[in-house]
Image (cartoon, rainbow, N blue to C red; front, side, top):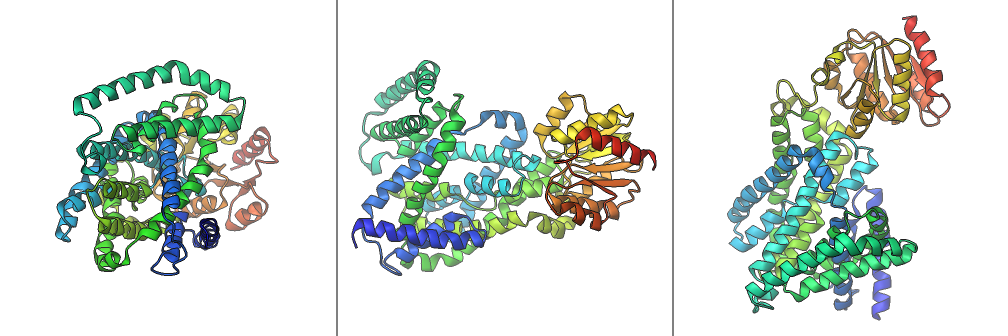
Length: 544
């Protein structure tokens, strides 16, 4: 077949296998690697031309690092501050130290053991964001904490790549320029980049913004230009691409650029994983299955445990630590890129890449289901997780944030716009309201409006013990997910709460299902104005 025909077959296979992966609720990364294996010489032997695929793969990695730099939200790290840094750095240190020892015991050569142990520390931001978004948990406390330490990991992988390039540039050959000249060049490059970020790039982006196509072209050209510049200095293209993205991260158009590049990034990364699958040497992989299983168990169990231990010590509840910990129970696409980069530098051999890829396939597959079914998994393990929680989890204790929390007539779960309007109307009717939400942003908005609120997750039945239910006349949920409302209702019925329970129906059929489940009344936010609903509830509560 011609190269064009080979690419056409690879894309068709990727679409078919990708469809199966979606049905199995697996990330497409797994599907693409499997397609590469299927198309490679070990199975079907469909693809013979590797150089064009390698070029596409390199461009895909460049765009990936550019988008990572572009979306590096330092404000999120500053907001979460101690917990993001403590969990991120703690998990990185734990995994590198104990992972290296484990790799050494498995008989790996010291440099290979170092590479693999570092690769085990990185978790996939792309996969985690997708899974948490699908579950509606991206704005939850554990979701925001996870995003915070994933950003710490992204910074760490870039620093690791930079360190490796400085250790041995250009495949062990003589450096492109003497060290002092290289340092002076980097300093001058940094000053020039700062001036461009401060004065030129914002104006250039404003001009390009009149044409979305031109804006995307300019962004790609900027990213690849800096990647090529870094390559010419003896550094990696990935470092240059990351710096290019970071240079645009403070501009107001960063979200517009990032949203347009996301699809291109995903398409080009397809070729990286296809190329990876084509290059896998089964002669090496066959003897590494045992080691891969041991290292996978270390990642699946050890990484979540260290995150839960750190978060529990800092005063978070065991459920928050468990949910955040599950997000590090896999390795990342960066792990594979990192080891592949080591091969290019001459530090490690193909066996390191094969082992890392096997661990990636195992951990990504299993951790996906662990995150998707995190609540049932937590329910089963909760009795043994008490060691990861302080006697008083002060960061999430409802009574610690405000003395008024112990005196509430009505508890309202969900502090979105509808929930806040409802709370204001109930307070205007003379009731004391306590608002509860798992989104720190929604809680901040509610506090700014003068409402009495605290953090809480409706799926965490243990949290009900910290609410003033013995004095409350009613519990109201404005949460849109019927499944979450059902969990909250079951937990309330199992508790000592005697007041009225009102839930919200946002979709057709939800109202009847919630009423049949035992809700005293059901709100329909799409048809009921908050003022009308509040008048009705005031009348019902007054009769209690």
